[in-house]
Length: 177
Image (cartoon, rainbow, N blue to C red):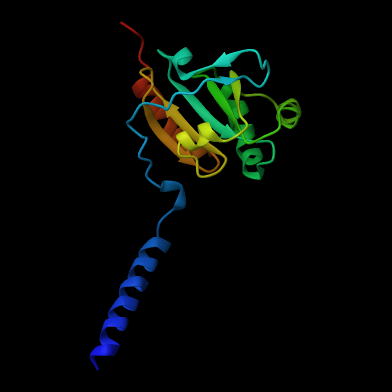
């Protein structure tokens, strides 16, 4: 009898963990980076490979880092929202072109519009790894001090922009005294 009880208990525990896991939204995976300094990078820009951009260049500004790629189907879904938001000039959007070909990325932006103040090239994906990117698209809100305040896995939606991102922008985008 004992030899059946232990496997049954282990099986039951696994079923409970699986059931709990299935109720979670994969977009709400907690990021260990939220509340911590944004990882440093020094990457060439998509538009001008001789120009390099770093997070330090954005110090003193609240900004969005949007991880995207021309091969990403979900990126196309969120792109019109980014283009519309960029027109408000509320905060700069920096693109992180993830594991993409430069010519493909430039053609994609030409076709669908360019919401980015600048887009940097992460051809080997190392910067994405430093930011804990699970896949594209992902969006980060980084405050004036360079601290990550928000991470969105998957396409940004109008609701997420309105209910999650904008309140944080208002909170952290305070004029320097």
